[in-house]
Length: 170
Image 1 (tube, rainbow, N blue to C red):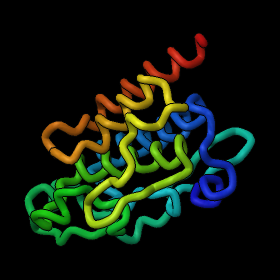
Image 2 (image 1 turned 90 degrees about the horizontal axis):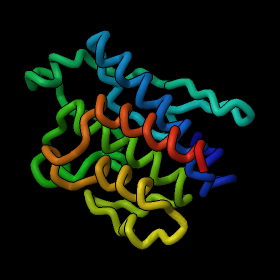
Image 3 (image 1 turned 30 degrees about the horizontal axis):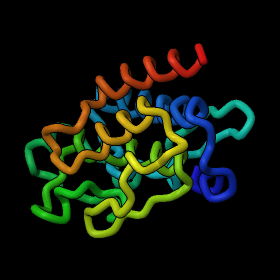
Image 4 (image 1 turned 30 degrees about the vertical axis):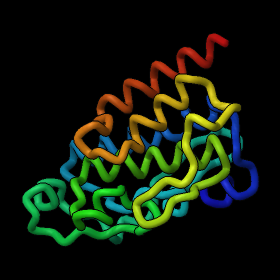
């Protein structure tokens, strides 16, 4: 996915949501199995160009979901995709950080950019004139800097389904 983003992004909204919908579904399946990947990013996602089918790769940072929640496992991941709370409190909750990483993937697919450093997104999704209001809303709900206000993985999956349905009608 990293190479696709570098070569082809920004891509159309429908394709971007189809890709991140699959990432979200994979993360939900992992959560149900009690596993947190902890390093969702384009570099760890394989994508077939023609079908847009994705596969999640590199489970070297994966850990038991409940152990992460209890604090018995040290937080890990790639700083470039870690949520703002990591930089302010060194805290990573599995759901909130995973949703942030999926939001980053979506934003990269939609804009071709990821201007993020030390917990701060330097571009405002609202200024992306080529994005529809629903795409802006989805990105903002996944990338909000307040973890408790970030959309849940389950709600993100439902939002993806709604967006895909709406964009398919257009």
